[in-house]
Image 1 (cartoon, rainbow, N blue to C red):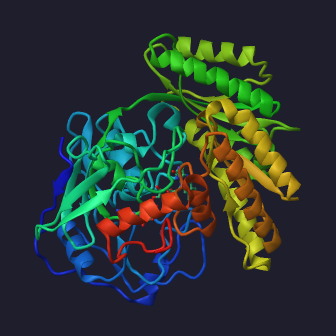
Image 2: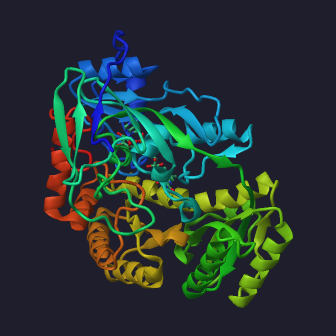
Image 3: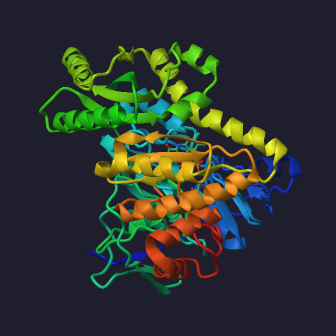
Length: 511
Ligand SMILES: Cc1cc2nc3c(=O)[nH]c(=O)nc-3n(C[C@H](O)[C@H](O)[C@H](O)COP(=O)(O)OP(=O)(O)OC[C@H]3O[C@@H](n4cnc5c(N)ncnc54)[C@H](O)[C@@H]3O)c2cc1C
């Protein structure tokens, strides 16, 4: 096994034009976290690896961005040149079970191209406008991580432009850490940089986007996946793909949290049996929306979905079920599980081929974050300092019920309005403060920090899928997870690969 990788030179081309026109630049100054005050030294749209390399080599500070759907402020510039990847938009013809894709391809577009040949890329976050490069940089996960895992598992190779403009072709299996914990990167000028593998132990959870991946004997590719643009620009990637599954979506009303947790546990058991060929009910994802989250959703969103607003303490679960040849057995088994869990209402179903029906149900799920975001935006009108204040917690599934109690009791003790939703089949929920004043935001941050400490004590993590970015709170959570020493070990990686702190300075940790 090799511990050293050799960089190559990109073709020599002029750097792409850096646009400083305010009208163009203004649409690149924030991301989905809506943190105010973004500013940039221009924006460039390289079309290929050579232009990326040329731009990076000549710039002092660079922030690579994709669709800027980051929820952490990581794609909000703070004076850098914004390197928009949107013109890196090539998709090669899928070959076997893989496809070579430019970093700037939106996942929705990738799925469209794959669907035409009966293929599918499973690890999609809820927002499918995210770009391939952005999802690799954040190790994005989503609803179906329960069955398919996070982005990391699906990336076979990446082409990376390093801070000096050198190019690395990193293929899974080619370069692994030495026994005493380092990689070596040999530059095109024969300089050898030793990159130390951090020594912290990552929590054993199904999804994690919490700084640099680290494990004994790890693959070099895993260092770049989830690095949030701090180590290099992802220019292209080779992704694994699968045959497009036929899917059923089912929306189920549960009378309360405990019924929802018990049903989720039963469905997970069914799914795990199905994956071993011992049952027909192949559940790929279960999404949870709590009473308060549903309350935030306006009536017209329920009407558009054709779903009755649930009453009392009801919560809802949205299931994605992958259907093999025996659709009838899968649906019969679903009914049997729902009956055993004492579910009172028939589920709302969208059967395979009913794409419109499925979209209506998914839109209702999407209405939850957008309705809460609208409340935050309205509060911001009166109190400009108000901002989204939310957790991205993951716990081992056995601690799910305890984690929901923890979120509710902590947020209530701080006197906060809140809503909870997320990817419950992974134990990954998003407790969101619904702030009405800046004081709510302040107390919300304290509550999230308290929750994070307990979640870490449960063997979970407070940074499941959205990453760390430039959020002061999330950077504090990263330190809760790995301690100061862990952050210093990450800094050592950064220094080895980007000694001048050219890429995304202030993302993950302070320079
Ligand atoms: C409504 C909504 C729902 C969401 N749901 C989910 C979800 O279910 N799961 C989830 O994981 N996330 C979710 N997100 C967050 C977001 O979509 C993901 O983090 C996504 O992976 C970001 O992709 P992007 O292309 O928008 O990247 P950006 O937001 O543009 O960038 C994110 C980070 O990656 C870096 N980066 C971007 N492109 C590159 C590149 N080519 N090379 C190197 N670094 C790069 C940036 O510097 C930045 O630090 C959601 C966001 C929204 C708005």
